[in-house]
Image 1 (cartoon, rainbow, N blue to C red):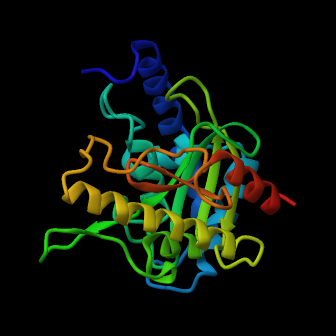
Image 2 (cartoon, rainbow, N blue to C red):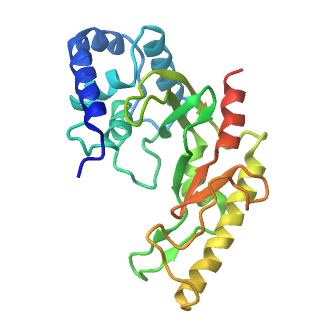
Length: 258
């Protein structure tokens, strides 16, 4: 079943042809820039990725250029709605496999759509709150924030935003920065909010196992995309995954834009 409209799919294929035509020039630019070392766990490598994005934007290139160079096309079919983000990850050396672990040794790679500067179109998913234990088959949440997938992904998170255009046509780069969860401006706030959702998930999971609640397709947690339930409003929950809500993302994005 088609997930991309015929009009937007034609647009994407047309843009794909344009990016293929200028691919050699784009390759020349990228080859001239220092790239993140994929064998390094040094978080300073994330800044190299930011520098590449800034140079791309300033030289008139965009998300589609990176996607086409990474995998040869923008959308393989009119149902390919997730390929852009995965291709962006692999362009910067990430795995692009949706793993709960950070995308690269040097940090997490995020590509997010915005409606205007600093304003997310929806939310930014940080990662799963729980993971299934292969031996016990039970869903488990880490005890400590510093051991969580959220902390690992946010320790150094390379974020790039691009402007929304239709549903799938967005490609113009806005900004890029490295989010650091250990910044004292928000570390304690994020930690407390994560601990709130940890405890809430454990209670909901216990209720589910006891037959008190049913598991929906989206999971056992009630959605909280605005972060209204957590104490500090930095995070949120959707489909049992931790997210940055729009309000906190705006705060962080504006901070790094200074």
